[in-house]
Image (tube, rainbow, N blue to C red; front, top):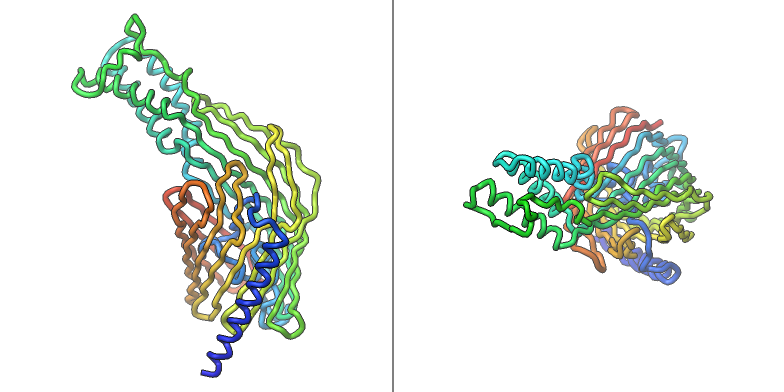
Length: 436
């Protein structure tokens, strides 16, 4: 009972200290930050819902909380946990991105033009049916993505980690491509395509179904090609970001408090992308590469017993704005996230929460995530699962993201995989590396 009471007291003390740190961070940093979404850089974090502020291991703590590098039970020369990881790859995207790419590959508008011309040249049931199938497919694809957001986030990294029990360090290089956008399909254009579908159904069924829609035919009975009237389009904005950084962490005297820093050099190349859905062409407007600039991540960790720990990370302390070739502004601004975890040899539980709502690059929609994760070690295999829920202040409702993955470690070699999905998006990640 005494041990439980002592742990309880430390927990309340930790919550109080963390709350004070959070309030200070919120006063010093704009909470309504126009920043990119908080990234997921590795399969362990992806499988565990995107958590990592208090639960990342020494391999990937550079991305989630550099303070975690000083948590090993042994000093660095005896820990055997120094690591080299490459490749480390993670990618996520909305399903609407795949539909846009499919539309670009198939080029329905050219096929509609071709089948309309074929029908006008020979008005048979077969040519009408061919045109009907193209209109159905095009309208169906547009209906899947009409006025829905686009999102893509992919990164690849190399990490060298050197953890210890009092201080630790790491070096990393990462490249990240991230952006979002919007598919704009006017309701009247969807209705127009639906009218064409009904008119062709009327012809192929001999009048048994559909409607005649005489307004879609000219005076000679030819079907009017609607492609020139299609204005539906997809617009997106994003950036390719490269970072090179060195992380280091230090335990404060003999206290349970650890602080970590990641000074880093960043370069950014912005993109504005516009695509008309009645054309295969993509109008992409890249900016020039920016001059390298210095930024900083800061992490805190409090370990209040042998199992429970909590932390906070503030990423991108230095703000930077970029103007695209189309005159739009993309900002990199601070991101603040809290985390708590329970770590045992048989089970790991983790929870992360974004203090700040991060604004999208293109739209006004914001992401503010609450993430839950678990890891179950069974011999050389580790099974992982997680869930991420958005607490957005505005924008369309996003359903929660479920994730799962596993890690395999054989001697010094490790290999991890993860997959995450919901009705609107999916992601995958992998890592290969070794410890020495």
